[in-house]
Length: 262
Image 1 (tube, rainbow, N blue to C red):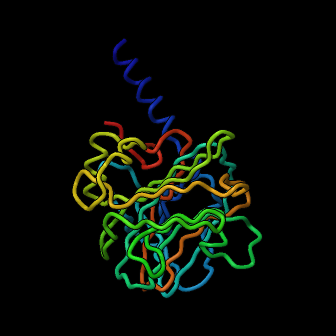
Image 2: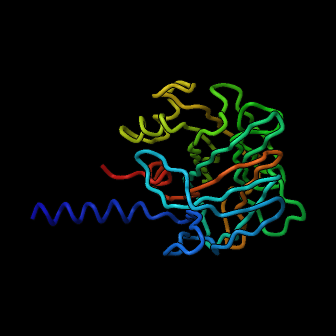
């Protein structure tokens, strides 16, 4: 009986962790689709775009082999094939070989009919490194809130970016947190939650959070995702950036991070 209950509990945990949108950037020739909620093909907008065999691993979190490398002002997008509304949680991982003052590293969500897709024209943009700034930012339908405290990202270092989008009648907000690998290990051994990450001190030390920011969107700002929208990875003015494990969940930040049940 105890064994049956344990199996049922494990099934519930696994079922609840199923993302509504996921792309692990399966390398060419690898088994399985490697994506959920997108049409699976990433299209080059500009620069050089390449799927690589090695992904960005994070301690305590699940992941698949493979990643998306962008070079020479690289930009790539995929079409979204699912509707996501209300409150949802997301994450992605990134690493860059070099950082300059002009570097811009971002994952953005946008409608399908834009003549020019940029972080400012997209519906939602999560910037790990903003242009001419040492810090990241959220841009919601043109409204920019820049991070000004904490620790800037460093070259050749992997980071986990977590976000929460609240699009309810009584409450609308967008939040983002940037964590180092050491911080991911610390929090995954305890709890990855909005309350914990908001109460953590800012900085590069083990129990902290590198950066965090919150945006209250303008009235009418589009926060939900719809079939036909696009998700794009951008590495503008940056010689080489790698993105991996884009994941959106309706359940929690832990599920969005790819948390491995202990």
